[in-house]
Amino acid sequence: MLLSNPAFAVSSTPHRMVFQSRSHWTEAEANANAVIKGKIGLHQIVGSRRNLKFISRSVSEGEALTEYDTPFPNDYIDLLKQAKRATELALKDGKQLMEIEFPTAGLGSVPGDGEGGNEMTGSMQLIREFCDILVAPEKVTRTRIFFPEANEVKFARQVFEGASFKLDYLTKPSFFEDFGFGEKVKMADRVKPGDELFLVGYPYFNVNEMIVVEELYKEAVMNTNRKMIIFNGELDRIRSGYYPSFFYPKLAALTKSLLPMMETVYYIHNFKGRNGGTLFRCYPGPWRVLRRMGNKYFCVHQQEKMPSLKEVALDILPAA
Image 1 (cartoon, rainbow, N blue to C red):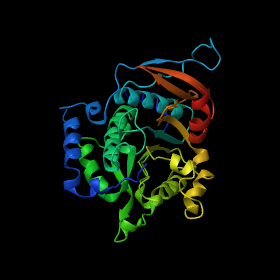
Image 2: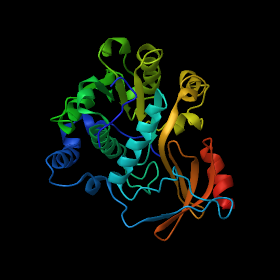
Image 3: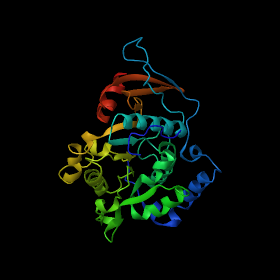
């Protein structure tokens, strides 16, 4: 399950105190250690959805399935395998900036279903599992994993115990942290000459984190052979205008600078309610809107470009 032909040279605002005080993440730490020691499976922590069947119903009746009609994952183990394969294909196609996005409170969950800190802990554990199956042994020391804050690297060292991945951070806490400010970190100083792959985990708690991600991309990835993956960055907040451009001009500018260069290689976003469903993509396949009926998933719409969440919720799903 290692990368056989690597293409690289190799809703509520969450609260991050879960990583900053041992008393707040004791349970998460115990779970992480249990996973690492093999006492319990990762899917037992972050949820599983076994026994789900997938049926793809094309928009035009009778249309045959293609090799890229990836079924909705049964559980997180299945999800990671799909995300690995999608990433490998994207790397083979020369993609340099990639996004992986899916819920961590359960495959059928939506943002806000889980407590913010627990969702971040789940993402950290899943990043470890993902990197273990994606990166070949000889590329491990050339893979740098960035977490949003310096404090979280301390906890990450326990989750990544026994692995040689380079763990790093985007920002450092400051006296004004409670007001959304962090100490400026020059990204060029965080990068080493041997680095080949950067994976950035969940940079969405502080609005400055994605701005730092863009800096990292421009200073250390663009015009190089390096690759970057943004893992559960909740970029839909930026795409949808969640942050008003008047108050967050730099963040809003990412929709014209950074995001257009990004390939979303794996994506799951759920919609609840009477017209609920799921927007799903596994590279290089199309974007598909799924609807669950019982234990089966049906494809009710598909297209090549990513539809907006508003379009899916107000137009596609009600008409399905």
